[in-house]
Length: 135
Image (tube, rainbow, N blue to C red; front, side, top):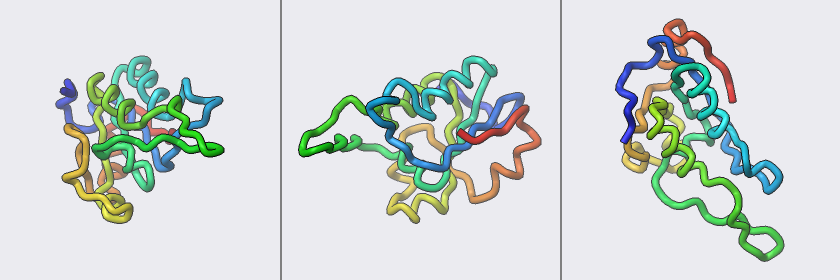
């Protein structure tokens, strides 16, 4: 269960992830969500906004194995597992509502503690953050 109960901002940083990237064999040790975890620790608090295809990170269910040359590759990071780690660490995770149906999803499919916001709402909150950046 997430320990994050604060509203967006409040001295935290905001990281925005728009592209869903499962990673490659060469980069399985680090991806945007792992970097978000490090930023959360080193910056003293982080909120994460998922937009576009990255909203798929926040849905329940298992990530299918990556198939290469007729074989399943099970060593690639699972963004849902990494997102659960972020939530457990106190990272506030937000998803822009219009991007859910655009990818065949509904808010009911989201992981617990992931919040939805209308498009553009987090942009209006940028002044409350100490920094805003894209991952």
